[in-house]
Length: 127
Image (cartoon, rainbow, N blue to C red):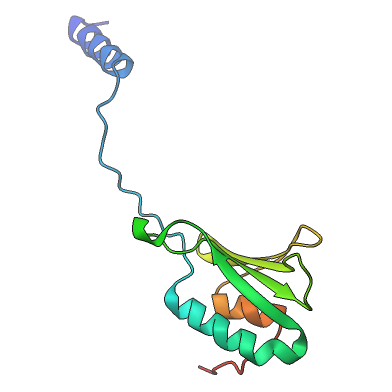
């Protein structure tokens, strides 16, 4: 092996063993949040669904002063003291969980679709 090749290999090994300098993060967080428009839809959905047993809903999550939205919504039905459903963002989708049975029911693309899956009480706009 030539001397130049040995020097190149030694330099490569030395570079690999030294800690790397921190690089700027190029990853963009695409996690969805419950926004004000979702809360407006939730209010309309609750009002329309009272006859179908919808009782109440509440949103929970990080403090809005931190710049982040709400992480999940709990939904109560038929005056049960425990929440029946949880709607939460997961990446670019929304998950619907049956809280009573602790079972995930579905994973959908929109918040409105999640509410419709629980109780189809709002007229969906056709595109």
